[in-house]
Amino acid sequence: MPRYYTEEHEWIDVDGDVATVGITDFAQGQLGDIVFVEVPDTGAELTAGGDAAVVESVKAASDVYAPVDGTVTEGNGQLEEDPALVNSDPEGEGWFFRMTLSDKSQLDGLMNAAAYKAYCDDL
Amino acid sequence: MTDTEFTGEEAVETATLPLDAWHRAKGGRMVEFAGYWMPIQYEGIMAEHLWVRESAGLFDVSHMGQLLLSGGGVAEALETLVPGDISALKPGRMRYSLLLNEEGGILDDLMITNEGDQFGIVVNGAVKWEDIGHLRENLPDHVTLNHNEDYGLLALQGPKAVDALSRLVPEVASLVFMQAIPAEWQGHAIGISRSGYTGEDGFEISLPNEALTAFADALCAMEEVKPIGLGARDSLRLEAGLPLYGHDLNDEIDPIEGDLAFAISKRRREEQGFPGAARILGHLADGPPRRRVGLLIDGKLPVREGAALFDGEDQIGVVTSGGFAPSVGAPIAMGYVPRDHAVPGTAIAAEVRGKRVHCTVAAMPFVPHRYVRKQGG
Image 1 (tube, helix red, strand yellow):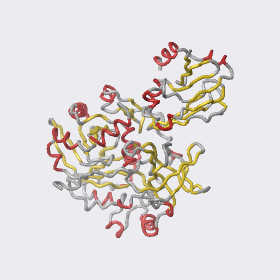
Image 2 (tube, rainbow over the protein chains, first blue to last red):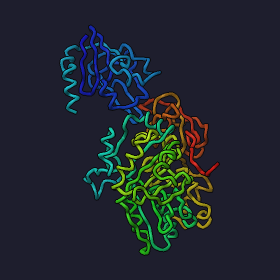
Image 3 (cartoon, chains in turn orange, cyan):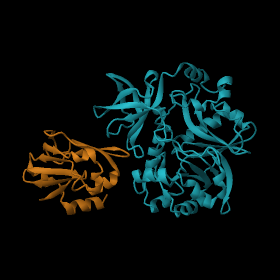
Image 4 (cartoon, each protein chain N blue to C red):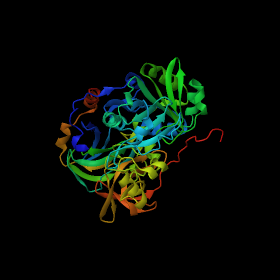
């Protein structure tokens, strides 16, 4: 299952026509203690680069953007009870939402793991 | 005065604190605040916040302005600018007060200490240059104002602060809240008060810039003490119900609106003669049109500065500070509401990203203060 990354520090796992989206370990480290996550409603239509979710740390609220176009099929309900999952397991249990992919060619514009690591090293 | 905020001295470079390298070596994440690079956090705001509540945390607040006023009649001169009873302030005692404009609006909140032969004033870093200008313009010529830039300011806060600091300066154990003494550490003349901005017991220590690193190292070598950043300083003071100037207080808000009536001393209420006395005493007698209140937030969504407050469809006020409160375990906020809504238990709503969040007006502090007011008690 290939994993892609955005310059806004989201990751996206693609499995057929469905993708799982979250924020990267680098992102959670920058945000600090996460106290609230607002995931999109099932059925929400997302546009690449548009607002998809909000993550609130102790100090600030930050937007999470949709990496590609698609429709939300599920938000991670566990984050409502335990938003700190994003700190403890950002690229696993701390996923934000699942979505369909309207246009798979959009994935070509994203980074792979090696490219994302190099991108973070330059920040 | 937001419209003049950026005139005159723009393009001033962000300054570094004397402990800049120390913060970076300790892993501090540096951000710009009040014109300085300051540590927002080291290991994390939540952990740092909780550490201060259970042990002791060291804060670098050297961005604040340390002013010294000397000459004859300093107390009387200060009383023309602030509403506190400065004449009654005994040597070795300090008091919270407010610099007021002619309309009674708050120009800054500050600490005034009677140091015996002079008065020490500590003002907010973000407005210290404006404060100095205001004081120079309004104090009589026989009062000399010195801005002591040769000294830094550290705060050691938390229930174990007294244990840690008394190993370096034994006499601090005998101080009570809002008491100050001169002391010496490794040959340096320092000043220590039992005071702070967290609601916990603790101390603020003024010491020469060249002694700051060694002093901070000596404290942080103790198992009770960790360095604490600005992020936890903000969440701690919010839980303690303490306003932050420029957010919860500004030059259009008077002390009664700001829920700071305690800062208008009894004698001054009777004699008046402080800036804005008519408005302030009117608000004291009849109630202010709006007042700063605490807000307990339902659920987990943080309500932050700028959020509008509603009673039904009517916008009644605005949040001036807010966020997740680690020791409360929930979001809290403070803001301004009309007098008739400023009663604890009043149910209102805040708007966050188009959603209404229920909240309840609450008495402050949210976490009880633990000041040491009496010795041997």
